[in-house]
Length: 207
Image (cartoon, rainbow, N blue to C red):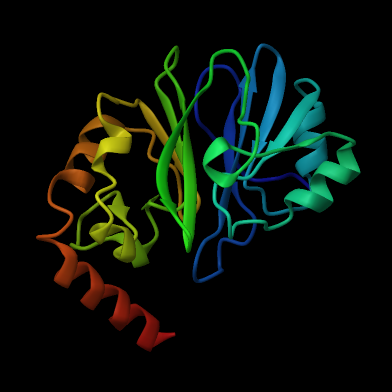
């Protein structure tokens, strides 16, 4: 079975949504760095191994959010590669040339890091940012903040970043005008908080 992938850059990196019909639209990413794969917050899907083997070896499986264990353990074991844990989550960090790790949230109830690849301006943020309906405060938004993160002063994590593509953990990646989409998403988190929470509540009720 062929995995439905969404290209993230010209190196072969891609995102995928294992079950497009799933309400929370869990998304994952595979990033190519120097001919090797870094798999990020993965949800397993038929055809994943074949998609990875077509390009090069897998260097590791990373989890960027403490509660996003998903299928990382099973995939890492199957591929015979290590689990990689950011410093924010209590690990040694993701030490791979060309990848910058940044903390996003560091609380007892929420620990999250992001990955930034400056050479291709690729941002990977799996929970604070999202494109699923749950995240979008306004109709027409292409990218939004998790409703709870609007109170956590997360803007500093994205300071100075002007991505050309953004891979998220819920919803499709942003691959067109990603920089403006990020700027709009983080510009007024508190002002948009009531609207975002109300929209999230309505969606939850409909489910």
